[in-house]
Length: 164
Ligand SMILES: [Ca+2]
Ligand SMILES: [Ca+2]
Image (cartoon, rainbow, N blue to C red; front, side, top):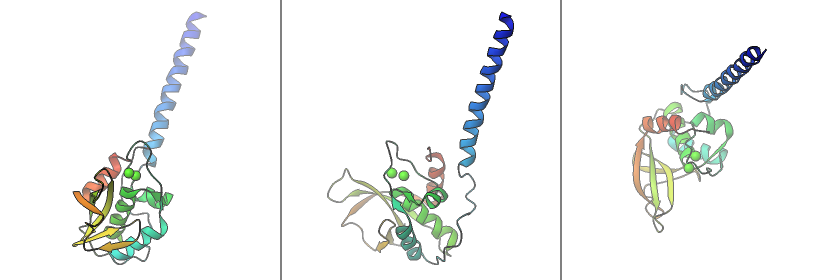
């Protein structure tokens, strides 16, 4: 009898472990590994179209404790994110829906307050602010650049840092 109970206990434990693994697997499956575009054609032809589209359609939502880099498809699907998510989506739309490439994400510090950290876009000598839909040839009145990541790096960061 004791043996049977022990066996039943082991089976139950194994089942729970298996369910936990499947559950984790389920989370993995919902993540965006492929980057093949499921975002429909949004009628975007230029980086300016893309920045206007993102500003008009994505709502600002701050990250929690972690700085979570969402994949562009997820930001698109949820219609919300914060600065790096806005910028990654802008880059993705430019790179996949226009004839233009070589977009960058810029990390900036506040021009008057260095503790402020912000992400925005850059392409061909122009700064793009996807939270407001504007673009400028000089953004130093607001932010001082401190890092510049290319498209591949940003898409990779969106995979490894999309943790929720
Ligand atoms: Ca963030
Ligand atoms: Ca984020």
